[in-house]
Length: 124
Image 1 (cartoon, rainbow, N blue to C red):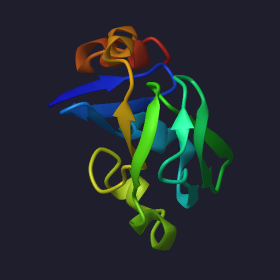
Image 2: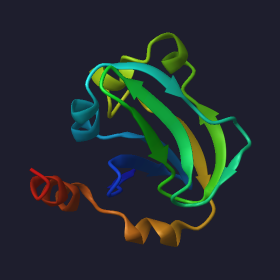
Image 3: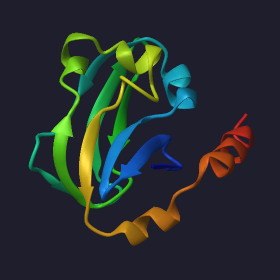
């Protein structure tokens, strides 16, 4: 299992060619209390950088982008009932979707945990 991060603050945890995607602790803190999450449909295809989901918080609405190209294989249905899971467990139960990765070479353009920590430190 390897976790990568995008500059848009998504994380992707890759295992056996499938990535589980969510938003980082930094992103959920910036958004504030999340009140609604719109996830994609299983079976839909997305290219790297495509808008895949939407998060609405008390502060703003924000798009979630796909960190890789692939097909959605699962969604986190628990978010429909409890969007606050993204706040309470952004790196765990608050995941958004799983995607079957078409080209694992796209992962090379993402950051590892250390790279992401340096990236967000530069934003503050």
